[in-house]
Length: 554
Image 1 (cartoon, rainbow, N blue to C red):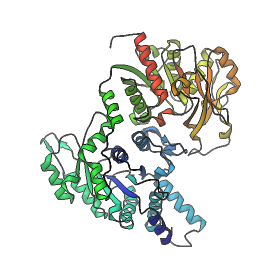
Image 2: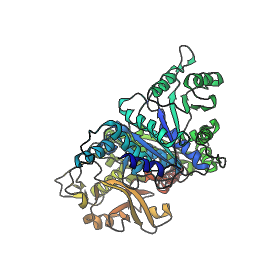
Image 3: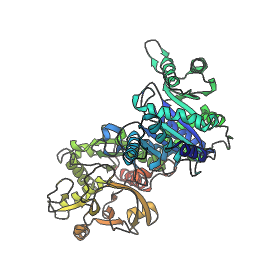
Image 4: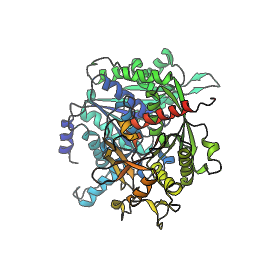
């Protein structure tokens, strides 16, 4: 990008304010939650807010990463495979993100190298500064060019001091001077560890982390300190003194029972007011957050509880199914019940032990995934739910497994399978989508993003949504094979949702069952605190009804 182009972008975004969130001392401190919480508070004061994630890994996106490597892959409506933090952003703000909200080092370098190959740099030596940093800045500024947002929060992945993060740190350092001091705020999130042996909270790691930032040319404006204990006035003053910030800009972030309490804690600490003061923006209306507080009240004071078995391949890592866990939490609060989620590894389930593993659960959810491992266990779990009239919810691969199980055990097709697991099968009730045939590259080539779905009147899905036209997000290559539709419907499994343009099957149900729904899409991507997803709400309600019909000792 030329200097004139860079200046043009800066002028276009002059009215947009930027908040940069960095992390230090340790990873996984919760930059995404702090960013989302700040965004929620600013939004509640009347500001138009969005959040962008800068990820330092060289992968183009997390779409090809094993969930054990990086947690779940979140999908935006426009079809981007992104970091799970975008899920937090959407759940807190109740606004959709897009591919522009997710930036990776892989994308940056790919773009710059492609420009070099085309000769766009006119023979100049391509370097990290200015070419890589200019592209990072362009991606950051692009969100502000249309005047849609008053404040854009930029979360920089990784930890200050990581080699991978240095180009991002340098880019935002430059932006501070490009945009002007009152158009940017730097928030640094660090850890204040407690040493049990001495009974002390130690601030030295925070001091060293801020020193690292200073060596890279950035003075943080606000410090957010993660801690297990109350910091106290004296310790806050000490941190302020040694880190060159005002005492009122040292924010305490104590551990809380649920991430949804963080916005309320940050409001009490005055994080949003501090940011607005530094950006020279009026405070606006005091955030009421009535719906948010009502959710917290229901979460902490449930009237009942249900037990849900979550059957999946990656249950050893909670973040692998992050959006599903959160969607069940939202749905539980909507039903005024506590949802106890029991994670069951699908590759541990056999026909012999299935009843022992799943008995006592009020509902069974079979999670999405890819590949053959654990498939037989998922099918056994579905059979158990179907035969014992336990509410069942299948998502993506979970829906496909439900089709295979029904075809084998009910529809008289013992060889039924998915072509994903058996390329040579002659009974593919789940087959490769026509549009996917001939595709060899893995990254970003699935059916991705939001698609329309038309529901059958009177179906469980239609009852849940309370409308017949919906839009949901997808991430798959295989689909229900309509060649077997008549045979399946004759035996009692019907299709109750289809894409109006392609006629692709999106939802299957068993009307004779108390609640048996499989969906090809990912409803968990669109559930939020103030708008819990209707299918999850209906599933939890069915589980509660099942529990009341078959009471057991807790």
